[in-house]
Image 1 (tube, rainbow, N blue to C red):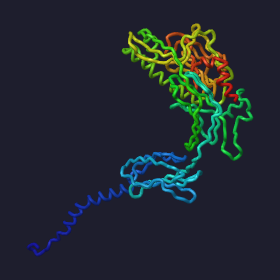
Image 2 (cartoon, one colour; image 1 turned 120 degrees about the vertical axis):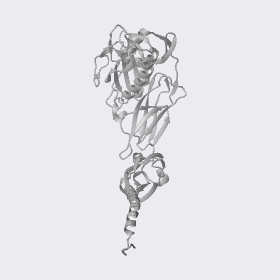
Image 3 (cartoon, rainbow, N blue to C red; image 1 turned 90 degrees about the vertical axis):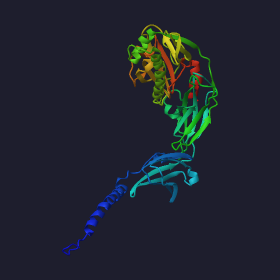
Image 4 (cartoon, helix red, strand yellow; image 1 turned 180 degrees about the vertical axis):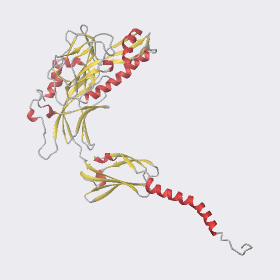
Length: 457
């Protein structure tokens, strides 16, 4: 109370002070609540597509982010089965779920998978997948396969499979696609077109016969095995070991001297560089890096092979040509007396006169016509079922991609484009993109015994 007898009220001032102190806290709590309700990122999950098909056993990898809780259930026949129920401690979590339908009580057929993820207080995302449970592996039978296959050659096998979506032969990491025999019924190789198709009874899974060409690539070891494999879309598979034995072969070796003149004449234009300061490394880039890249390209081109047999007789060697280099020659390159690189020659070099006409070795469809790195101007003809022929170092190309070519037709002229020191033709036979020796395919007896007899079995 002051001298006039009037009492001051300090409560209003104190309230203001309290409000100033509390207000930031209120704002912070409000902002946090808003964040938890609205601004929290939606939960995400990757890998759910792996649920589309469930075989007898499958490990499914899921990548989850911004998730407070995750639940995955399977629904079938009125039953609800838990696959995952977790509250991840980390903002990004990886789950590896091993799903065994039979252990879970799931039957073959349709099943609904529902994944529910939550983040914050109200954010929820639900995914529904219509899955197919298929725990029955395909049936597979090897009807015929070669007893022996020599390194650098190739063979044909006849397989029969039921309930398969993919059939192939595997050699280490390589897969060689098999083709439905019924699709080749319009060719002269099929002995009885009326029996070449589906062997199943009405209502049964399809039973089909398949042709598969497969190579014995250079460098393969005799201990390696060929396996026939039948898979379905769910991932079930059946594997049979082919009785085919691998036999290695001794190939020649040679030493090649590379000089500055070769670098300037051949390597410089390939690399599109002038005044190369490191000729050894420049040669290695072309001989090793380009070669590996070109091999990948051949595999890719081979994957687009026609599903019909387009040829019908032995392959032709270039007319009036002399063999300058053979398949399998193991080459060591030297520059100024020092070893700088290695390679293996996986074709036949054939020479006649400069810019000699080059004929198609057999009938087929042009799959590639253009520049192909170390091969220079190149034509690749598809003969069907993964079998192709490659013509490299051409000075001129007379055909276009997609064009049908008859055996013996002129497709270009020999030359020295690419990694070549002189005018010649590099001829390779490709089986699923792997180069094998043309020598076998020039031999009518070998072609009949090792190919035609299998295609008419």
